[in-house]
Image (cartoon, rainbow, N blue to C red; front, top):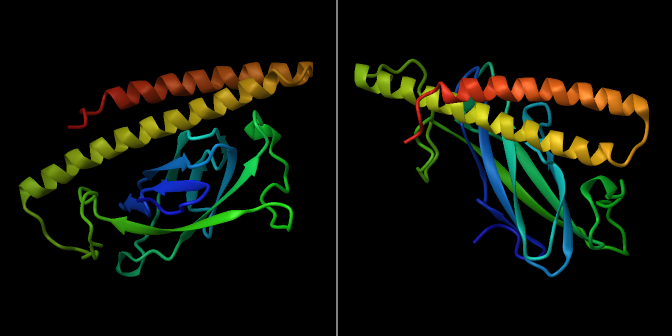
Length: 221
């Protein structure tokens, strides 16, 4: 059972990232609304410069769910003993029906006597590539020698991870594009419209390039 048993449940209960130097790593979290109300959520982290969260704010309809993707930015050095002290905080609160994410008030997650704000803390775990199904933390042994077969397997795994990371970034770009489309329908500013069209064109070209790159990598088994 996931963390948080009131407004929102979170699955899995922690963020597990395959850690490799100079490479991004992604982790998906499924948020489930356990109520008959619309519930807004917001994700915070103690290390905002290290992680990219999309969407970091949203609204989940009654008994519905959504998936957020957390991306660990490429790091230049290993943490001591592969131990990560970073934490994530998921806040949730009930909001009026049919409210859109862009309509959430800035103070929606401020604690006061008139509304209930639930909080769920999530820890971060770094693991070796290929060890995503292991329930134990893996300590990092720098400079250890591996057999040619092991090195080949790791090379294939890295290609798969790069392809998966590209696909995740494509999903994030598509989400931002949908948000901008909704925003464009609410404004009649010609300058905004021109900027939006230009941005959509750039995003479309970038998505096409990313998809071509992703499809050139070997398929994930």
